[in-house]
Image (cartoon, rainbow, N blue to C red):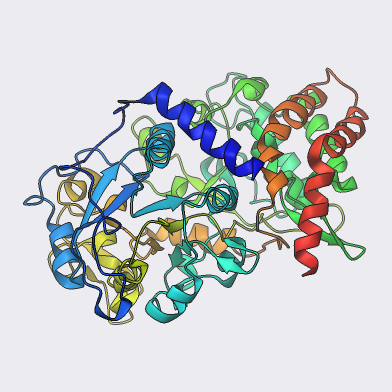
Length: 515
């Protein structure tokens, strides 16, 4: 009860502070009405009486303001038989607006969870309802797209509270997209092969730093850069030691977090050595945004970084910007490196990374689930994702393995103006069949070796996890890497993390895992 009261009081305080906040808002029409306000409580005869009110965490520039221009929304409503009204915000504005609605007692019919921890808070506050039985009965066309791990991750005490996002068919649509990227043209300039081991990668970084890979006769390049938060810039190094600091691994019949394994310290020792050798961008310790690293990439100062597969696409913003000054610039995704102990594999992405929740005030939640199910039926999700087949896109051949856009409908500005894109992807099923050949190849490489994460759920103490990393882990990690603290400071950091809440997280995770 104390947790519930605390949660409600916090959102009421935020509501008072931010009343009237409209920043980031893209669409709203009329008074807030929802299926919670009207509609039969008899599931057998329930009919939609008002459009579903959906609070979306997606905003796109140029999104159509009027329904006449939003041809995708018209298509969805006409085909599904349901109407909906979007209110769109992004980032902190989305979180603030959601808190305002929850504090007011006038909830949206549906909104989006971004992680399991949020779901625990909403469930304890009584603002969402379970959807497991509804999904089984009314969401049969969605189920094939949803990973069982996502269902487990969004379940609390055996009850599912989120309808998780899904993935389309084929290897191209598997969830892992993050790995280590290299400047392929720099490798070619220096006569180097793509590295397959951590030792070979070290040699590549050294050459990128000291052997003038761009041929400008200046000592102005680094091998590696990235964002400091949680050591994310160096995930490929941790992975080569068989761990991710934030993921879970079975050791001696128990689950432990990668952060407190011996391998964590071994990986930090390697990163520290590379920094001492001058292979790592000296400014990485102050980078908090990916855009800061991207600036260095466009300036051709860095040859390697952790990134997603779209960096290899020549039409992606970074490589596209590079080509304006260097037509030969080329990024390549490298399969996970083998470490000194034979381990290899990129961090498995979280399956429970997003999905829809339904307000506890909705009288006929089966209507919303039936609406979401429409997106899974006959691949209807492709309509908001790519547009209308034959008008905006077609398959390149009968195998339906690749999408080809008609005219300029693949260009963001054009497609957003008619409603193609994330806001109308009410239930998101990932499909990358529109990707370039370079991206197809990058996905093949990044998925070649994958580490297994043994736990994806949330526990009450996990609310502390991010703050523990920010206050305890990140500062010590950075200082050890740049030599301001000895390597043994990692031992003290791990002990402090355990004593200030980390052990509680481990105990709770193991209690759930053993069930």
